[in-house]
Amino acid sequence: MNATIAVIADGFQENLITCIKSIRAHTDIPIYIETSGKENKTLCEPLAEFANLTANWQKNKLGWGHSVNQLLGRINSKYVILMDPSTQFTGDAITPTIAKFAEGYKAVGWRGGLVNLEDGWRSTEDKGDGEVDVLFSYFMVFDREFMVAAGGANPSATYYRNADIEMSLVIRENGGKLLQIDLPLTQGRHHGYHDVNPEYRDKNSKKNYQRILERFRGREDILAPRR
Image (cartoon, rainbow, N blue to C red; front, side, top):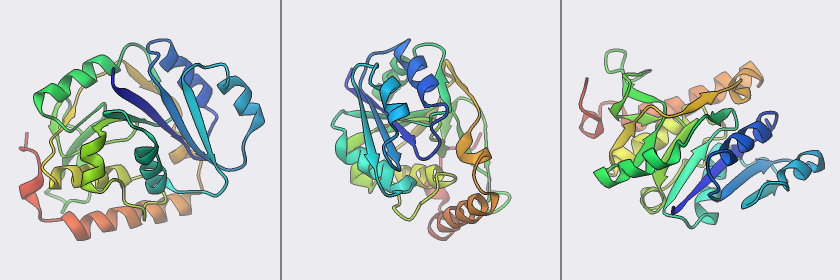
């Protein structure tokens, strides 16, 4: 299978080993971990037990957008499976996901939704399985070459929240369709949301969404059919 799993563990590594164990229980495809901070020997030792795994330690904090783009540059596989360490496999989530690309989609994921037009693009609605405007990076698979050609993630996104929405809309702006499907996945505590400084979280989430509004609001031509 021409795919690589990419996990961003940006300062929240508590769930990382559990996440990797769950992946390895169901697939042996390559895993690439992008993380910031001084190399953690306590974490390195258990990571070394996993085959076909590469961990890239960045001394300085990159931010979410730069981390995604680093991964796009380092990974050569056709498909990139972008994950958060809070997401865990309970079955084979990859085979049914990759199969959907044969139907013409450029990104397929587990959670997503449609932009809420009634509140001026300020929120999204989860409509369940089907074509969507946005996918969330808890588990989001995309065609790497298409994503690179579309420009990748916005490097201004230092924080993940809403940055995956922005990246999704970039895919749609470039003619790519996105699909949300149900998959054998669960999510533990999302440290990237619950365990960060609330002021930092809210400030950077707002910055990310403001860029979305400035660039995309009113562009109904790029959105999926309403349902």
